[in-house]
Image (cartoon, rainbow, N blue to C red):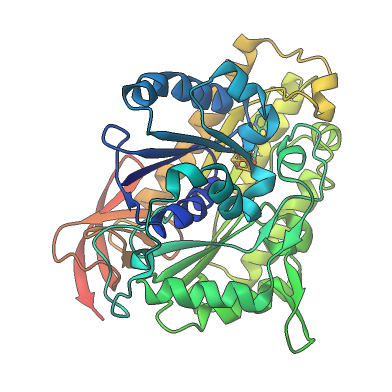
Amino acid sequence: MRLHVVSFGCQMSVADGGEMAAPLLARGFRAVAGPEDADAIVLNTCTVRQHAEDKALSMIGRLREWKEASPDRVLIVAGCAAERLGGWIRTRFPHVDLVVGAKSIEDYPAIVSQALAAKFDALRETREAFASVSPGAAPPEAPVGWTSAVVAPVTIMRGCNYSCSYCIVPAVRGRESYRPYETVLAEIRAKAALGAREILLLGQTVNSWRARGADGRERRFADLLGAAASVDGVARVRFESPHPRYLDDAFAAAFAALPQAGEHIHMPVQSGSDRVLALMRRNYTAASFLEKIARLRAAVPAIEVSTDIIVGFPSETDADFERTLELVGSLRPASAYTFKYSPREGTESAGMPDDVPEAVKEERLARLNALCDGLAESALKSRIGRTVEVLDENGGYGRTRDGFRVKWGSPAEPGRLLRVRVTGTMKRTLLGEIDEQR
Ligand code: 5AD
Ligand code: SF4
Protein backbone atom coordinates (compact mmCIF):
# COMPACT_ATOMS: atom_id res chain seq x y z
CA MET A 1 0.00 0.00 0.00
CA ARG A 2 1.35 3.36 -1.02
CA LEU A 3 0.81 6.72 0.68
CA HIS A 4 1.30 10.17 -0.81
CA VAL A 5 1.35 13.19 1.50
CA VAL A 6 0.98 16.72 0.07
CA SER A 7 1.26 19.70 2.39
CA PHE A 8 0.46 23.30 1.55
CA GLY A 9 1.45 26.21 3.77
CA CYS A 10 4.00 26.79 6.48
CA GLN A 11 6.63 24.48 7.93
CA MET A 12 4.26 23.48 10.71
CA SER A 13 1.86 22.25 8.10
CA VAL A 14 4.64 20.25 6.43
CA ALA A 15 5.63 18.82 9.82
CA ASP A 16 1.99 17.92 10.54
CA GLY A 17 1.98 16.04 7.25
CA GLY A 18 4.77 13.88 8.65
CA GLU A 19 2.81 13.21 11.84
CA MET A 20 -0.24 12.27 9.81
CA ALA A 21 1.75 9.84 7.73
CA ALA A 22 3.01 8.00 10.83
CA PRO A 23 -0.12 5.92 11.67
CA LEU A 24 -0.47 4.86 8.04
CA LEU A 25 3.22 4.01 7.72
CA ALA A 26 2.87 1.98 10.92
CA ARG A 27 0.15 -0.03 9.16
CA GLY A 28 2.48 -0.99 6.38
CA PHE A 29 2.02 1.90 3.97
CA ARG A 30 5.08 3.04 2.04
CA ALA A 31 5.54 6.73 1.20
CA VAL A 32 5.60 7.58 -2.52
CA ALA A 33 6.49 10.85 -4.21
CA GLY A 34 3.47 11.26 -6.49
CA PRO A 35 -0.30 10.69 -6.41
CA GLU A 36 -0.51 8.48 -9.55
CA ASP A 37 0.24 5.14 -7.95
CA ALA A 38 -0.79 6.01 -4.39
CA ASP A 39 -3.52 4.04 -2.59
CA ALA A 40 -4.05 6.79 -0.03
CA ILE A 41 -3.46 10.54 -0.16
CA VAL A 42 -3.25 12.90 2.79
CA LEU A 43 -3.83 16.44 1.54
CA ASN A 44 -2.79 18.86 4.21
CA THR A 45 -4.28 22.29 3.54
CA CYS A 46 -3.50 25.93 4.42
CA THR A 47 -5.90 28.84 4.78
CA VAL A 48 -3.63 31.73 5.78
CA ARG A 49 -4.47 33.57 2.57
CA GLN A 50 -7.36 32.93 0.17
CA HIS A 51 -4.86 31.93 -2.51
CA ALA A 52 -3.48 29.12 -0.31
CA GLU A 53 -6.97 27.79 0.33
CA ASP A 54 -7.92 27.98 -3.36
CA LYS A 55 -4.85 25.96 -4.32
CA ALA A 56 -5.82 23.19 -1.91
CA LEU A 57 -9.45 23.16 -3.04
CA SER A 58 -8.49 22.96 -6.68
CA MET A 59 -6.22 20.03 -5.91
CA ILE A 60 -9.09 18.25 -4.11
CA GLY A 61 -11.18 18.79 -7.25
CA ARG A 62 -8.46 17.38 -9.48
CA LEU A 63 -8.21 14.25 -7.30
CA ARG A 64 -11.75 13.18 -8.16
CA GLU A 65 -10.57 11.21 -11.16
CA TRP A 66 -7.82 9.60 -9.09
CA LYS A 67 -10.37 8.51 -6.51
CA GLU A 68 -12.91 7.30 -9.06
CA ALA A 69 -10.32 5.15 -10.81
CA SER A 70 -10.42 2.83 -7.81
CA PRO A 71 -13.01 2.97 -5.02
CA ASP A 72 -10.52 1.42 -2.59
CA ARG A 73 -8.41 4.54 -2.70
CA VAL A 74 -8.58 6.82 0.33
CA LEU A 75 -8.48 10.62 0.27
CA ILE A 76 -7.97 12.39 3.60
CA VAL A 77 -8.18 16.20 3.69
CA ALA A 78 -6.56 17.72 6.76
CA GLY A 79 -5.05 20.91 8.15
CA CYS A 80 -6.05 24.55 8.46
CA ALA A 81 -8.49 24.91 5.54
CA ALA A 82 -10.09 21.62 6.63
CA GLU A 83 -10.59 23.16 10.07
CA ARG A 84 -12.12 26.33 8.64
CA LEU A 85 -14.38 24.65 6.07
CA GLY A 86 -15.17 21.44 7.98
CA GLY A 87 -18.11 19.42 6.68
CA TRP A 88 -18.57 21.73 3.67
CA ILE A 89 -15.62 19.97 2.06
CA ARG A 90 -17.39 16.59 1.91
CA THR A 91 -20.60 18.21 0.67
CA ARG A 92 -18.75 20.00 -2.09
CA PHE A 93 -16.37 17.09 -2.83
CA PRO A 94 -18.15 13.80 -2.08
CA HIS A 95 -15.06 11.85 -3.19
CA VAL A 96 -13.26 12.92 0.02
CA ASP A 97 -13.25 10.08 2.59
CA LEU A 98 -12.30 11.97 5.72
CA VAL A 99 -11.85 15.58 6.83
CA VAL A 100 -9.63 16.22 9.86
CA GLY A 101 -9.14 19.85 10.96
CA ALA A 102 -5.88 21.27 12.30
CA LYS A 103 -7.20 21.40 15.86
CA SER A 104 -7.60 17.61 15.83
CA ILE A 105 -4.03 16.80 14.92
CA GLU A 106 -3.25 15.33 18.35
CA ASP A 107 -6.20 12.90 17.96
CA TYR A 108 -5.46 12.22 14.33
CA PRO A 109 -4.19 8.63 14.65
CA ALA A 110 -7.33 7.59 16.56
CA ILE A 111 -9.64 9.44 14.14
CA VAL A 112 -8.01 7.82 11.13
CA SER A 113 -8.11 4.36 12.70
CA GLN A 114 -11.78 4.63 13.63
CA ALA A 115 -12.98 6.26 10.45
CA LEU A 116 -11.13 3.93 8.16
CA ALA A 117 -11.21 0.75 10.26
CA ALA A 118 -13.11 -1.19 7.60
CA LYS A 119 -10.55 -0.32 4.97
CA PHE A 120 -7.55 -0.79 7.18
CA ASP A 121 -8.45 -3.83 9.25
CA ALA A 122 -6.80 -6.11 6.76
CA LEU A 123 -3.52 -4.26 7.14
CA ARG A 124 -0.84 -5.58 9.37
CA GLU A 125 0.72 -3.34 12.01
CA THR A 126 4.41 -3.08 11.27
CA ARG A 127 7.35 -1.38 12.86
CA GLU A 128 8.94 -0.73 9.50
CA ALA A 129 8.47 3.01 9.73
CA PHE A 130 10.73 3.10 12.75
CA ALA A 131 13.47 0.86 11.35
CA SER A 132 16.74 1.98 12.84
CA VAL A 133 19.46 3.65 10.86
CA SER A 134 23.04 3.71 12.08
CA PRO A 135 23.63 7.03 13.90
CA GLY A 136 25.23 9.72 11.78
CA ALA A 137 24.56 7.94 8.48
CA ALA A 138 22.01 9.84 6.43
CA PRO A 139 19.23 7.71 4.98
CA PRO A 140 18.90 8.21 1.21
CA GLU A 141 15.33 9.49 1.35
CA ALA A 142 13.84 12.09 3.64
CA PRO A 143 11.10 10.81 5.98
CA VAL A 144 7.69 12.40 5.28
CA GLY A 145 7.51 15.95 6.63
CA TRP A 146 11.29 16.42 6.94
CA THR A 147 12.97 19.24 5.05
CA SER A 148 15.64 16.80 3.88
CA ALA A 149 17.06 13.46 5.00
CA VAL A 150 19.09 15.27 7.68
CA VAL A 151 16.84 18.20 8.67
CA ALA A 152 13.95 17.18 10.93
CA PRO A 153 11.10 19.34 12.22
CA VAL A 154 9.99 18.99 15.83
CA THR A 155 6.74 20.70 16.81
CA ILE A 156 7.07 22.06 20.35
CA MET A 157 3.91 24.13 20.65
CA ARG A 158 0.66 24.53 18.78
CA GLY A 159 -1.86 27.34 18.49
CA CYS A 160 -1.54 31.04 19.19
CA ASN A 161 -2.70 33.30 22.03
CA TYR A 162 -2.36 36.54 20.05
CA SER A 163 -5.08 38.17 18.03
CA CYS A 164 -3.39 39.88 15.11
CA SER A 165 -6.34 41.38 13.31
CA TYR A 166 -5.58 39.88 9.86
CA CYS A 167 -4.74 36.36 11.02
CA ILE A 168 -6.89 33.25 10.81
CA VAL A 169 -4.42 31.04 12.67
CA PRO A 170 -5.88 31.44 16.20
CA ALA A 171 -9.31 30.50 14.79
CA VAL A 172 -8.12 27.34 13.04
CA ARG A 173 -5.40 26.23 15.43
CA GLY A 174 -6.81 27.36 18.77
CA ARG A 175 -4.98 28.60 21.82
CA GLU A 176 -1.39 27.81 22.71
CA SER A 177 -0.50 24.41 24.04
CA TYR A 178 3.04 23.35 24.81
CA ARG A 179 4.39 19.85 24.38
CA PRO A 180 6.14 18.54 27.52
CA TYR A 181 9.91 18.97 27.83
CA GLU A 182 10.67 15.25 28.03
CA THR A 183 8.37 14.43 25.09
CA VAL A 184 10.13 16.98 22.90
CA LEU A 185 13.58 15.71 23.89
CA ALA A 186 12.54 12.09 23.27
CA GLU A 187 11.34 13.07 19.81
CA ILE A 188 14.62 14.85 19.06
CA ARG A 189 16.61 11.80 20.17
CA ALA A 190 14.44 9.52 18.02
CA LYS A 191 14.87 11.75 14.98
CA ALA A 192 18.62 12.06 15.55
CA ALA A 193 18.76 8.25 15.62
CA LEU A 194 16.99 8.26 12.24
CA GLY A 195 19.74 10.48 10.80
CA ALA A 196 18.67 14.05 11.67
CA ARG A 197 21.64 16.41 12.04
CA GLU A 198 19.61 19.62 12.16
CA ILE A 199 16.53 20.05 14.32
CA LEU A 200 13.95 22.69 13.41
CA LEU A 201 11.85 23.56 16.47
CA LEU A 202 8.42 24.69 15.33
CA GLY A 203 5.51 26.65 16.74
CA GLN A 204 3.29 29.58 15.81
CA THR A 205 5.07 31.64 18.47
CA VAL A 206 7.78 29.09 19.04
CA ASN A 207 9.72 31.02 21.71
CA SER A 208 6.70 31.43 23.99
CA TRP A 209 7.19 27.72 24.83
CA ARG A 210 7.64 26.96 28.50
CA ALA A 211 6.93 23.85 30.51
CA ARG A 212 7.70 22.27 33.86
CA GLY A 213 9.95 19.25 33.47
CA ALA A 214 9.27 15.92 35.20
CA ASP A 215 11.66 17.15 37.93
CA GLY A 216 9.30 20.07 38.66
CA ARG A 217 11.73 22.68 37.33
CA GLU A 218 10.34 25.18 34.85
CA ARG A 219 12.04 25.24 31.43
CA ARG A 220 11.98 28.18 29.06
CA PHE A 221 12.55 28.19 25.33
CA ALA A 222 16.27 28.96 25.70
CA ASP A 223 16.65 25.88 27.96
CA LEU A 224 14.97 23.72 25.34
CA LEU A 225 17.20 25.11 22.61
CA GLY A 226 20.27 24.22 24.67
CA ALA A 227 18.97 20.74 25.51
CA ALA A 228 18.15 20.08 21.84
CA ALA A 229 21.66 21.14 20.82
CA SER A 230 23.26 18.68 23.21
CA VAL A 231 21.43 15.61 21.89
CA ASP A 232 23.89 13.11 20.36
CA GLY A 233 24.21 13.56 16.60
CA VAL A 234 22.59 17.01 16.50
CA ALA A 235 24.89 19.55 14.84
CA ARG A 236 22.41 22.40 14.43
CA VAL A 237 19.21 23.70 15.99
CA ARG A 238 16.95 26.29 14.40
CA PHE A 239 13.49 27.52 15.27
CA GLU A 240 10.52 29.18 13.60
CA SER A 241 8.74 31.53 14.09
CA PRO A 242 9.71 33.51 17.16
CA HIS A 243 7.60 36.39 18.49
CA PRO A 244 9.51 39.58 19.38
CA ARG A 245 7.87 39.73 22.80
CA TYR A 246 9.96 36.82 24.15
CA LEU A 247 13.16 37.99 22.55
CA ASP A 248 14.79 39.48 25.64
CA ASP A 249 18.45 39.94 26.63
CA ALA A 250 18.51 36.60 28.45
CA PHE A 251 17.43 34.87 25.28
CA ALA A 252 19.96 36.82 23.19
CA ALA A 253 22.73 35.75 25.59
CA ALA A 254 21.65 32.09 25.47
CA PHE A 255 21.45 32.22 21.67
CA ALA A 256 24.92 33.77 21.45
CA ALA A 257 26.38 31.09 23.73
CA LEU A 258 25.03 28.22 21.62
CA PRO A 259 27.21 27.53 18.57
CA GLN A 260 24.67 25.03 17.20
CA ALA A 261 22.04 27.79 16.90
CA GLY A 262 23.97 29.42 14.06
CA GLU A 263 23.50 33.03 13.08
CA HIS A 264 20.05 33.35 11.59
CA ILE A 265 16.62 34.27 12.86
CA HIS A 266 13.32 34.57 11.01
CA MET A 267 11.06 37.10 12.66
CA PRO A 268 7.94 38.47 10.94
CA VAL A 269 7.58 42.27 11.16
CA GLN A 270 4.52 42.68 8.84
CA SER A 271 4.68 46.49 8.45
CA GLY A 272 6.88 49.50 9.16
CA SER A 273 4.01 51.89 9.90
CA ASP A 274 3.10 52.28 13.57
CA ARG A 275 -0.44 53.19 12.61
CA VAL A 276 -0.83 49.99 10.58
CA LEU A 277 0.97 47.90 13.23
CA ALA A 278 -1.57 49.17 15.78
CA LEU A 279 -4.47 48.26 13.48
CA MET A 280 -2.85 44.86 13.02
CA ARG A 281 -2.65 44.56 16.84
CA ARG A 282 1.00 43.59 16.69
CA ASN A 283 1.83 45.09 20.11
CA TYR A 284 5.08 46.72 18.96
CA THR A 285 6.22 49.73 16.99
CA ALA A 286 8.72 49.80 14.14
CA ALA A 287 11.27 51.34 16.53
CA SER A 288 10.75 48.76 19.27
CA PHE A 289 11.04 45.91 16.74
CA LEU A 290 14.31 47.34 15.41
CA GLU A 291 15.52 47.80 18.98
CA LYS A 292 14.97 44.08 19.70
CA ILE A 293 16.91 43.19 16.57
CA ALA A 294 19.68 45.64 17.52
CA ARG A 295 20.06 43.91 20.90
CA LEU A 296 20.20 40.54 19.22
CA ARG A 297 22.80 41.84 16.78
CA ALA A 298 24.82 43.20 19.70
CA ALA A 299 24.89 39.70 21.21
CA VAL A 300 25.35 37.85 17.90
CA PRO A 301 27.07 40.32 15.57
CA ALA A 302 27.01 38.07 12.49
CA ILE A 303 23.29 37.33 12.73
CA GLU A 304 21.20 37.49 9.55
CA VAL A 305 17.52 38.30 9.80
CA SER A 306 14.68 37.26 7.53
CA THR A 307 11.10 38.44 7.87
CA ASP A 308 7.48 38.45 6.60
CA ILE A 309 5.75 41.61 5.35
CA ILE A 310 2.17 42.32 4.30
CA VAL A 311 1.31 45.14 1.89
CA GLY A 312 -2.11 46.66 1.31
CA PHE A 313 -3.60 46.18 4.77
CA PRO A 314 -6.95 48.06 5.06
CA SER A 315 -6.39 51.85 5.00
CA GLU A 316 -2.64 51.55 4.27
CA THR A 317 -1.62 54.84 2.64
CA ASP A 318 1.39 55.65 0.47
CA ALA A 319 2.96 57.24 3.56
CA ASP A 320 2.41 54.03 5.60
CA PHE A 321 3.96 52.02 2.81
CA GLU A 322 6.98 54.37 2.73
CA ARG A 323 7.48 53.57 6.44
CA THR A 324 7.61 49.86 5.50
CA LEU A 325 10.29 50.58 2.88
CA GLU A 326 12.23 52.59 5.49
CA LEU A 327 12.00 49.78 8.00
CA VAL A 328 13.29 47.31 5.44
CA GLY A 329 16.17 49.72 4.74
CA SER A 330 17.11 49.72 8.44
CA LEU A 331 16.48 46.03 9.10
CA ARG A 332 18.33 44.90 5.94
CA PRO A 333 16.79 41.40 5.90
CA ALA A 334 18.80 38.73 4.10
CA SER A 335 15.47 37.52 2.70
CA ALA A 336 11.82 38.45 3.06
CA TYR A 337 8.52 36.73 2.38
CA THR A 338 6.16 39.39 1.08
CA PHE A 339 2.39 39.11 0.74
CA LYS A 340 -0.58 41.07 -0.49
CA TYR A 341 -3.18 41.45 2.23
CA SER A 342 -5.94 38.86 1.91
CA PRO A 343 -9.05 39.28 4.08
CA ARG A 344 -9.95 36.12 6.00
CA GLU A 345 -13.54 35.63 7.05
CA GLY A 346 -14.05 35.86 10.80
CA THR A 347 -10.88 37.86 11.50
CA GLU A 348 -11.08 41.38 12.93
CA SER A 349 -9.66 43.06 9.84
CA ALA A 350 -12.18 41.31 7.58
CA GLY A 351 -14.63 43.79 9.14
CA MET A 352 -12.53 46.71 7.83
CA PRO A 353 -12.97 47.83 4.22
CA ASP A 354 -10.41 46.09 1.97
CA ASP A 355 -9.87 49.50 0.41
CA VAL A 356 -6.39 49.35 -1.11
CA PRO A 357 -7.05 48.70 -4.81
CA GLU A 358 -5.56 45.51 -6.24
CA ALA A 359 -3.37 47.51 -8.65
CA VAL A 360 -1.92 49.49 -5.72
CA LYS A 361 -1.28 46.28 -3.75
CA GLU A 362 0.52 44.89 -6.81
CA GLU A 363 2.60 48.02 -7.25
CA ARG A 364 3.60 48.15 -3.58
CA LEU A 365 4.48 44.48 -3.62
CA ALA A 366 6.67 44.99 -6.70
CA ARG A 367 8.50 47.94 -5.11
CA LEU A 368 9.00 46.07 -1.86
CA ASN A 369 10.25 42.98 -3.68
CA ALA A 370 12.71 45.06 -5.70
CA LEU A 371 14.13 46.54 -2.49
CA CYS A 372 14.32 43.13 -0.74
CA ASP A 373 15.86 41.47 -3.80
CA GLY A 374 18.57 44.14 -3.91
CA LEU A 375 19.40 43.61 -0.22
CA ALA A 376 19.45 39.84 -0.65
CA GLU A 377 21.72 40.13 -3.64
CA SER A 378 24.23 42.34 -1.87
CA ALA A 379 24.24 39.96 1.12
CA LEU A 380 24.90 37.02 -1.22
CA LYS A 381 27.60 38.85 -3.21
CA SER A 382 29.40 39.90 -0.02
CA ARG A 383 29.98 36.18 0.70
CA ILE A 384 32.05 35.62 -2.44
CA GLY A 385 35.60 34.66 -1.45
CA ARG A 386 34.60 33.70 2.09
CA THR A 387 34.73 30.16 3.45
CA VAL A 388 31.48 29.13 5.11
CA GLU A 389 30.34 26.17 7.18
CA VAL A 390 27.63 24.20 5.41
CA LEU A 391 25.54 21.23 6.50
CA ASP A 392 25.31 18.94 3.45
CA GLU A 393 21.57 18.28 3.31
CA ASN A 394 21.21 16.58 0.04
CA GLY A 395 24.54 15.61 -1.48
CA GLY A 396 25.97 18.89 -2.73
CA TYR A 397 23.27 21.19 -1.39
CA GLY A 398 23.00 22.76 2.03
CA ARG A 399 22.75 25.89 4.10
CA THR A 400 25.24 28.14 5.81
CA ARG A 401 25.10 28.88 9.54
CA ASP A 402 23.39 32.15 8.66
CA GLY A 403 20.73 30.56 6.51
CA PHE A 404 21.95 31.00 2.93
CA ARG A 405 21.48 28.20 0.44
CA VAL A 406 24.70 26.78 -1.03
CA LYS A 407 25.46 24.43 -3.91
CA TRP A 408 28.81 22.88 -4.70
CA GLY A 409 30.17 19.97 -6.71
CA SER A 410 31.75 16.94 -5.15
CA PRO A 411 32.40 15.53 -2.73
CA ALA A 412 28.86 15.28 -1.49
CA GLU A 413 28.41 13.92 2.00
CA PRO A 414 24.85 14.20 3.28
CA GLY A 415 24.80 14.86 7.01
CA ARG A 416 28.34 16.26 7.21
CA LEU A 417 29.42 19.75 8.16
CA LEU A 418 31.70 20.93 5.36
CA ARG A 419 33.78 24.02 4.70
CA VAL A 420 32.85 25.56 1.37
CA ARG A 421 34.64 28.45 -0.32
CA VAL A 422 32.08 30.69 -2.01
CA THR A 423 32.98 31.39 -5.65
CA GLY A 424 29.78 32.94 -7.01
CA THR A 425 26.03 33.26 -6.75
CA MET A 426 23.08 32.06 -8.78
CA LYS A 427 19.71 33.63 -8.00
CA ARG A 428 19.23 33.19 -4.23
CA THR A 429 21.93 30.54 -3.91
CA LEU A 430 25.67 30.67 -3.20
CA LEU A 431 27.93 28.55 -5.41
CA GLY A 432 31.17 27.17 -4.05
CA GLU A 433 33.90 24.57 -3.78
CA ILE A 434 34.84 22.33 -0.89
CA ASP A 435 37.64 23.87 1.13
CA GLU A 436 38.46 21.29 3.73
CA GLN A 437 36.45 18.68 5.61
CA ARG A 438 35.89 17.90 9.22
N1 5AD B 1 -3.09 38.32 4.34
C1 5AD B 1 -1.83 38.34 3.86
N2 5AD B 1 -0.79 37.78 4.48
C2 5AD B 1 -1.03 37.14 5.66
N3 5AD B 1 -0.21 36.52 6.51
C3 5AD B 1 -0.95 36.05 7.55
N4 5AD B 1 -2.23 36.39 7.39
C4 5AD B 1 -2.31 37.07 6.22
C5 5AD B 1 -3.39 37.70 5.52
N5 5AD B 1 -4.64 37.69 5.99
C6 5AD B 1 1.22 36.40 6.30
C7 5AD B 1 2.00 37.02 7.45
C8 5AD B 1 2.52 35.82 8.20
C9 5AD B 1 2.71 34.83 7.09
C10 5AD B 1 2.79 33.42 7.51
O1 5AD B 1 1.59 35.02 6.26
O2 5AD B 1 3.08 37.77 6.92
O3 5AD B 1 3.71 36.08 8.92
FE1 SF4 C 1 -1.30 28.11 6.80
FE2 SF4 C 1 -1.19 29.32 9.15
FE3 SF4 C 1 -2.16 26.88 9.02
FE4 SF4 C 1 0.45 27.30 8.64
S1 SF4 C 1 -0.72 27.65 10.56
S2 SF4 C 1 -0.86 25.98 7.42
S3 SF4 C 1 0.42 29.30 7.57
S4 SF4 C 1 -3.05 28.74 8.12
